[in-house]
Each structure stands twice: as C-alpha cells, then as structure tokens.
Length: 198
Image 1: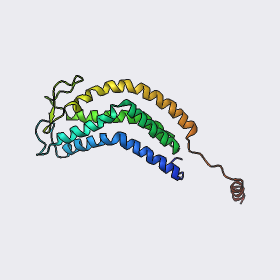
Image 2: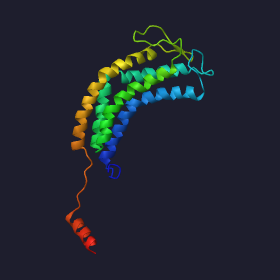
Image 3: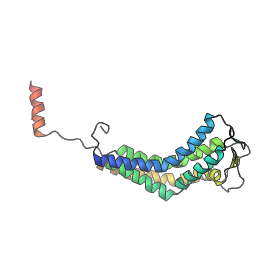
Image 4: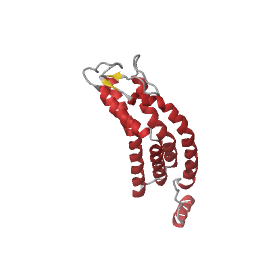
C-alpha cells in the first residue's frame, strides 16, 4: 500500500530529510568501507607496508576518525535517528521510521568496527586503554583503531535505550502515521454499484 500512494510535495520533503539524516549517520561508515573495499580490490593484505605504493592506511584512518566522531556521540546519534524516524512518519512510512530508529544507531557503530576487525593483523594491537599503535598500509592508525574496542560497551549501554524508544515511537507511528486509505465518494460508490449491476 505504501508504494502505490501518490508522493505529495510534503511527503517528498519528509523523505528528503530522512535521506539527509541517513547519509549523515551512515555516510562516514560507507566512506570507511570504500577505502577498505579498495584494499580488497587490489588484494592488499593488512600489514605495515604500503598497499602497492599507495598509503591507504592514511585514508582509512581519516575516514574512521570521521565515522567515530559521529557514531560515538550517542546524543547526536539518537537525535539524528529520531529526526529520521519523525521524517519517515511525516511521509506516512511507519515501518521505515521504526526501522530507522532501531537500526541507524547500531549500523553507525558496527560498520566501522567491522572495518577495523577486518584490517587487523598479528602485530596490530587494538584495546580499550589505547596502548600500542598499529601501522596499516604505511600509516599509524592511533586511536582510530583503539576506539573500535570500546564499541561493544557503547552498544551495551545504547541498545536497551534505543529498543525502548523504538517501541514507544513505533507504536505511535503505527497509530498516527499509517497511510490513509481514501474512502470512495458517494458518486463513485453509486457508479461502482451501477457497474456491478450491469
């Protein structure tokens, strides 16, 4: 039903706001995976040496720093996720809104963490205390790698709050933001009845 209704300018604006919120939260994580994917594409194994003469480690470090700056700020993460949810509800997309609040905070944290996990190697230390340094593809990764070790703790603290908020706003969304089915007018009803009698 949601896919067949007309998209009015208000709904288009709401969906645009939703897209901006999603891009803001997941864009840096996707940037991390673009750099990591480039290393996969040229078949560079994680290690301290340059990746075929390219210092991909510097790009990955900068992308991770940007991603962590957004995803580890839990207030900002929840606020933007709620904005995305309300925008989806305004566009009468209750399922999209509910999934936004449920998944966006988790994905914004997990995607960069998985990139770090897939880039570790034997001599690369990653820990909560920030002790040691990992050199990857010609660049020292510093806290951009160590921050990944704190993600499980952040998720442990954030997930119950996020689930409770999702349940509350999700129920409100289903009641108030469902797509409205237009009832046929008396003229249309009479016309359909006349067709049925023929």
